[in-house]
Length: 79
Image 1 (spheres, helix red, strand yellow):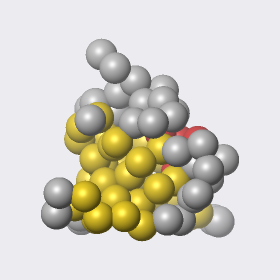
Image 2 (cartoon, helix red, strand yellow):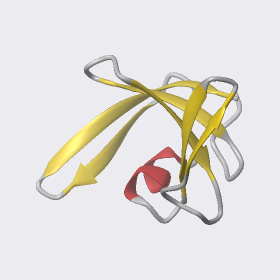
Image 3 (cartoon, helix red, strand yellow):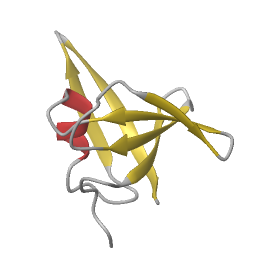
Image 4 (cartoon, one colour):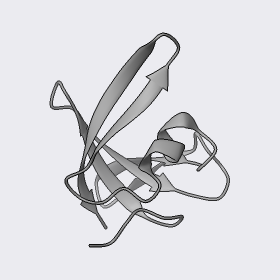
């Protein structure tokens, strides 16, 4: 299985079924781009979600600390 690394386009889903497309880039975190009808958010490996996604594979659940809480995401696809 391919793991997530810089340059990967990743599809994640949260517990509510909300899907997001993320591009793990070396810089420009927070930049939003549209491509082929998809809204894609650029994140860096330094961001909490970027750290959690590194080396994850399809089917993995990643946990992101958000202050005293946590947010969980399932890795749906790596493009």
